[in-house]
Image 1 (cartoon, rainbow, N blue to C red):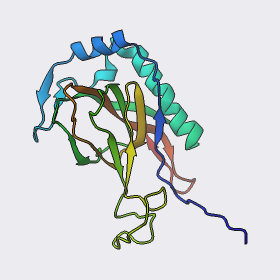
Image 2 (image 1 turned 45 degrees about the horizontal axis):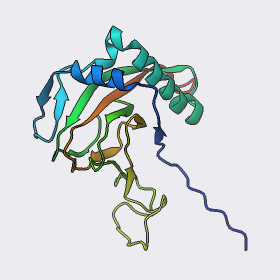
Image 3 (image 1 turned 180 degrees about the vertical axis):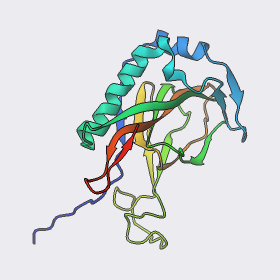
Image 4 (image 1 turned 120 degrees about the vertical axis):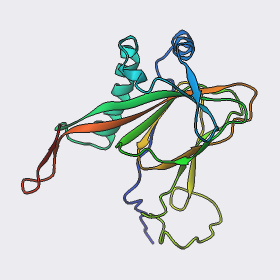
Length: 208
């Protein structure tokens, strides 16, 4: 018997390894930041919330945008009538014992994280299945599976390493495991929005 499995309507996440940034550039970026506590006190966030808008970071911004273009136009095949831009961007510092709560990024379309320093045993990025819009039979029934796979998983573990970039929809629930190392973990997080024409001829909307 011939069978075909169709994994319809996936949520697309794209990972880039060995992002082109040097150790010197990483250390300079980190040393330039002033960090402040977050409200829930599970990490430190840079006081600069538009890090990628700085002129001195133009090379970093250009390389990140190249990856965004691969994600949006080459993989998702979005037409070039729509363009994307960096909305906000900041650096996170997770000290030993810090972690990141389950959350989404509101008022954005695409989110990304570039990991700069990832000590061994400092935790991974967890991407969580949306319980409201389910791709696994029924979002309100939790059927036990023998093993986790791309069809039934509630959580995908994105194994982190230095110079890894991850792009994903901004409405995807995600969290960060606890930093169980004795060193700080650093990353740059950012959001993107879009400009362009939306809809068909009878429902055109222009986003400036």
